[in-house]
Image (tube, rainbow, N blue to C red):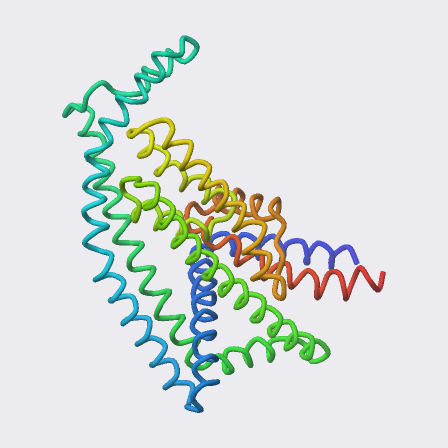
Length: 332
């Protein structure tokens, strides 16, 4: 018994070490699975409308995504480029505005040292060196995204074969449970992706309309950032609010508070109405669980960990409910 426990402990230690060494490969594979599930949602909807083979449905889904993305790019890209250039020119004005506000508060005078008076070459050069490093990292990210997309397409093209591999690798008494577990994970992950996509799109459109009505500059760019960061609950919406607040501050403090009020309404609408309504049949993540997972995976894996934290928690929650709760704790 002692030798068996020792051997099991060594095997578990080696498995954990191997998992940590291959963490980026595992992250790419999981990201591919998430993207493949997103493709599968579109494929199933196309097959409900038209009774065609899966390969043809996948080709139609990819074509629709490419055409839709191209149209959105052609419609929004010129305005986004102009607003990005405008944002760069607004940074010095924003810094001056913040210094003037801090100067009026004696308790915050020390914070003025954090805001540069002017931009010089000595200050730009270190940033330029960092940007060169970021450029290399960006190229690596693009390659990883292409790899994730390719694997996702292959998974979406023939999911049953990969499903059979997992089921065959399961001991015979647990194969039926594995089939049910895979179905539950697919349903929960697909429902989460659909719900979050609808929620993020709604927040983007509502934020864009609200900022446009308030006549806030850079409304489209701010709304796009707010919509994208909706996929990172708790942290994302709060971070995204900083851009429209800073831009509105350049106009007037009154407009800044109006933007803050608008974002608070939309954040609460998304957190307490849209997301629970869209995800009520699939998965319900507690804010504490979501935030803890994002902080933990962000500390371990950086930005990719933050982006994939919630899909991973969705899958883990289903596995724990099916295996730990039903198979272990309920029987115990």
